[in-house]
Every structure is written in C-alpha cells, then in structure tokens.
Length: 191
Image 1 (cartoon, helix red, strand yellow):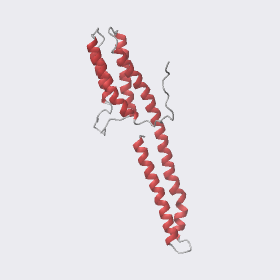
Image 2: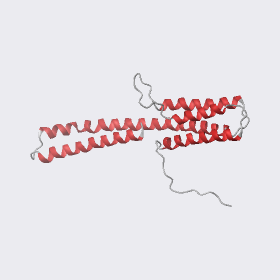
Image 3: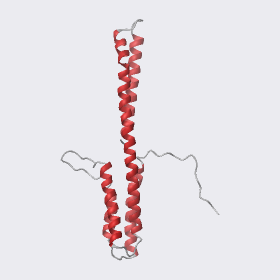
Image 4: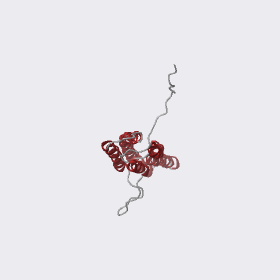
C-alpha cells in the first residue's frame, strides 16, 4: 500500500470517527433529558462503529509494512544491478560472461519491479505502461555497448545514459520510503 493510499484510508477512518462523535453528541444533547431509543441504539452500536474502521486501518498498516518490505528488497536489487552496469561501462575489454551477468541482473530487477508494481493503466485485456521505463533504458544502453572492445568515448556515453536513467528512477523511487531524517550530521574526518 502506497503512502498516498494509506493517507487516504487514515483520513477516511478519522472522518468516520469524527462523524460518530458528532452523531453521538447530537443525539445526546438535542434529545430529551432521558435517553431516547435512537441514542440507546447508537450507544449499543458504538463498538461496531469503532471496531470495523479500526480493524480495516490495522489491515492497511499491515499492507503498508509488507509493501515497504518488498520495496526495500527491490531497492537492494536495483542498486546492485545498476552499480554493476555503471562499473561495466568502465571495463574496456569486457568478457561475454561479465556482459551476461550485468544483463541478467538488470533483467531480474526489471521483473522484480513487475512483482511490486503493476503496469499503469493495466486492466483486463489491456497491458498498460511499464511504470519504471528508465530501467529498461539502462538495459538497452548496456545491450548496445555489448561485450566487444570499445573506445572510452562510447563507454562514457553509455555510462552517462545509465547514470541519467538511474537518477530519474532513484528520486521517484525513494519518495515512497518512510525515511527518517537524522538528528545529527556526521561530517567527514579531516586530517
């Protein structure tokens, strides 16, 4: 469950609770000095009015935790695959095995993304759009680079493409994490 979805559910549940409080107060204050059947019925239903939204909110928080766990695993896969791709662009004489390993890691990351996110606009009979197209751009840049001996300019251009695609993924991807801001800044050691 994304941050936006969780926030929306939380506000809806808070609205239900606020409405329940207002209805209870209105039934108690506006009514006669002795409790009315409406107020008594409302009082009897209060546990359900409180428990059902609370249970659903608990379910949503559990979904959010599960989603964040998948996202963290996916993030590790992406970081490793992209860093291997960047490192590969520095290799002036790559082997076929190195090439295969980098492409394999990128392919795994692409499919892991499919496991966490569905395509945008995906419906029955309609495939939709892949949500993180830049990772495919990284795969394409490495594919085009190949495993043959290449000049520094070609490798530098491929590296620039890989890093550019990675930056566009990273900023968007990290927004979904619930990251804490540190209370202290750790400065580097100076001799």
